[in-house]
Length: 230
Image (cartoon, rainbow, N blue to C red; front, side, top):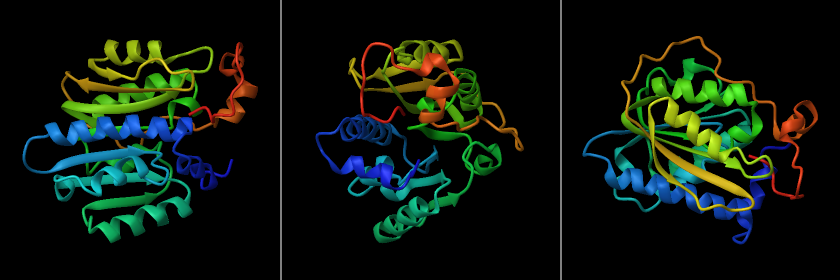
């Protein structure tokens, strides 16, 4: 999978990916609007080209309060993030080209006010989704928010992912209306934030194409779609 050209789908305003992006951005904007004065810490795992966060910060009055870390493996994508951040004067935005599954990246900025897990859950197995949610209790401060996405192809796992969050001390803030293509969720952490353990691996990024081959439960059984399953 070419994770650079994959982002071209966002340029079609009528595409499912563009519609999903708008949902994610609305939830990011809501978190920024409700944040208390002072520093707002944000971490983004598998950040892609950072469109979800950067397009909100373009005109948001709290943009200069944001201290963000975006971790992405593809250097072409991180180059774009850095250029946009520089153009916007966001000097407190750190971009890392590396494996987003490693907790070492997030030690300095955890616990964060906002954790972005967008484009991740459709590319990892269920046990790693659960582990990622577990680690969110270390990544996320008490009263902080996690925004996440998952495709809704059969079997639709958005409802059970909500349950997994809620079993781990996260309250449901918002979940997108049932859409045949995507789900977006926002959960607020009500538990006590734990120290982030360095040297841990959170997940194995398998990729939605490989998951179709290795995990039969990932195969859509009742409909076909050209939407990348993220």
